[in-house]
Image (cartoon, rainbow, N blue to C red; front, top):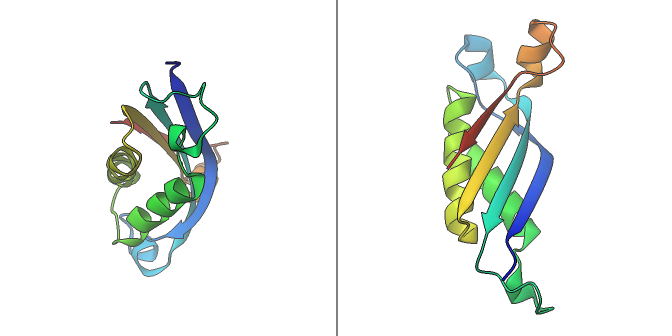
Length: 117
C-alpha cells in the first residue's frame, strides 16, 4: 500500500471568527487549506473506496466553521482538523487558516496559523 496525501488549498469561507467587537458583529473571509495523510488505502485498485470524497471534506470544513463563533483561528483550525480526521478516517491532518483581514491591517502578505492533529 502506498502512502497517500490528499489536500484542499485555500477553500474560501465567510465565517464568524475574531476577538474584536467588529469581528463578532460581521463575518469575515478566511481561507482554509488542509492536508490529510493515509496509509491504509490501496490506490493500486481503481475504486472510489480507496480514496476520499472531496465534497465531503469541503462540507466538513464548512460545517465546523458554521457551528459557532470562534474567538481564535487557532481554535477553529483545531476543530476543523479533528472534524476532518474523524470524517475521513485520516491518520494525520494539518490545517492552515489564512486571515486576510489581519494581514491587510498589518500590511503583511499573509497572516496564518497551522495546526496538526
